[in-house]
Structures are given as structure tokens and as C-alpha cells.
Image (cartoon, rainbow, N blue to C red):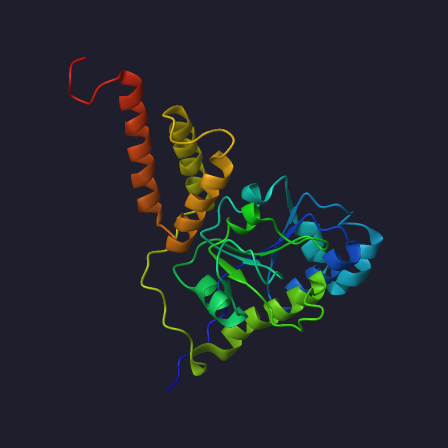
Length: 256
């Protein structure tokens, strides 16, 4: 007897600085279509509660009404353990690009915890710094002559695939689940990286004019590894102990 198909875990759709109210309304409708209850908007450049957005949302207007606003992507993702960001670029991404199926299966893995699917600006997508806040990058196959998709069209394709994970259930073969522990939440990781950057600047390993680029490489390394909450706490403890020792001028347990 086959297992009963299970719906994908709860998901937040995140739009970064959306400029078009029609696009925001369309994405809200898609969220309602495919069972996504949470829409997060990062510094929207349009009125997401205006008439144009509502006209496109139709019966998904409740998603607009409940949408949460954030000043930055890091704030919007602070409670999330798994994040997939979308990219329409073909080169220069800080992490490998994946097709929808493996990226979304990874997003659905692990115990119940906040997770997010991020879409970038209509005109220029997501910056490298923003892409590095995701554990996986998703790209949609399109023609080389004009590879950029409209925001709502891209959301439709990705959310349809996400919904399909639950519709297919056990009847569809899926990639083997990762054996790695569930990633820690973004808030803890970013806090640890902030502590590490401050220490490395203080001891002269980093310099102000190159710190951003070097920390981006470290962030990419950690994102590929998808370190767990326990590992984040371990590294942060090491950083704090090193700061204590450097400020004291001697090793712990030694008398100056």
C-alpha cells in the first residue's frame, strides 16, 4: 500500500524590492493557488495594498493583507533555516546553479522549520551578497536569446514545481536526501560572521578595503557546507574565546 502524499512544508515567498504592483498582486494570487500562506516583501517600491495589486491578486488578496514587510533581505530571512534564491544569470554566481527539482527537494528536506524561496528585483535580480544568503540557487531553463523571465512568470513556474512535490508524494522518485544536519537559522549565522569579521579586522587578518570580498568567500564556503546550529555555536564560541585571549594578551590560564 503506497504512502499518502504529504504536502511540502510551510514556505515563505520573499520578494526583494518589487517595483510592479501588478507583479506583486500576481505573486499573491500564485501563493493562494499553490497553498503558500506567507508573503514577505523586502523594501517594496510599490503599493502592495493598492488597487492594481488587488486587481491581479483576485481571491488571493488575503495574502497581500497578511504580507510582512522587512527593511532588508537579511531581516526577512533571519528565522529561516533553508533558503533557495532564484537567479536568471548564466555566469558570475557565487554558488552553483541548480535546476528546480534538486533545489526544491533540498528546500523541502529536514525537520519542520522556517524556509524561504527568494525572488529578486524585476530589473536586476539579486546581488551576489543577497545570493550568498541562500543555501541553494535555482535557475529556470530558458532561451539564450532572452533568458530573463517576468517576476510573476518565474514565480508561477517555481511554485507549480513546489506544489508538485506534495502532489507527487511517494509515487515520484526524488533525489536521495542529504545526510547533513538541518542548517542553522540565518540570524545566528550572520551574527557569528559579524563577530568573526570584527575579530579578523582587529588582529590584522582582514583590511577594511578588502574585508567585504574576503568575507564573501567565507560566506560562500559556509553556505556550501550548510553548517548546523551546533556548528555555528561552536565557531562563534571559538571566535569569542580568541577575542578574549587577544584582548588579554595571554593564553587562558596563564598569568601575564
